[in-house]
Length: 317
Image (cartoon, helix red, strand yellow):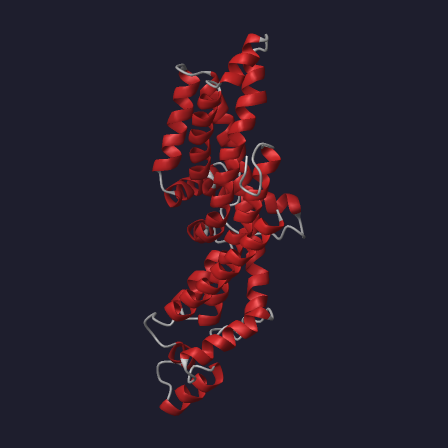
């Protein structure tokens, strides 16, 4: 166990180092000059030189990278070249919005996906399975931005069930915050729910064919009891894997959803930073997302042994 944790920590550290190198040198290949964007198109050469010196852009790339890593290890990502606001302050104000949205979308996707997958396996060859497969096909095929626009037109503007835009902090009014996040979470979790439904159905079908399930049926257990006690529990391993891989993707992929519903989250911050060549913000965003992926994957590995005791964290059965 200790050896496994140490190995994963080394892998996580290496991943973060490689990510920092890629994002630092890659972002500087973007067209445009951040000093020019900050000083203005009509700025004099002297003014541009002063801005570059103030931002440290006149140093070599290696010096800039070392400065960036040394400051990042201390939790200092610098200041936004666009607004002058500390990057940590920007992250602190936008990251909770995206995290709450992603977690809400995960809950919606798991509940809907597992329910439809179980229903599809329970009624194989009948209309509930056909309806569940149709819903999964729609969720996988229709783009989220189109579903978001339709949801705003019908459910928000038409029926008035949900707000069309805006955000309320969870610490201020939890009920109002959930009300504002419900529609974006439904849209963001649609495709994930479809994937979970298909994988849950396939996993449960395979589980119901195993010897221990046939033994349980032979002992007199009813099919619904076997389905939920054995089939659903074993399929949870697949669900945990999907959720673990997709949670980081939801955090980084919420850009479109946040844009449609005007949420002041990570997506808006990232787009604004890319459009204005805000190097410190872009670097911080990518590193935070990478760190999220690493931590989530580690947590998923540990959860395997909780769901199924036959799976050992050390990799032995």
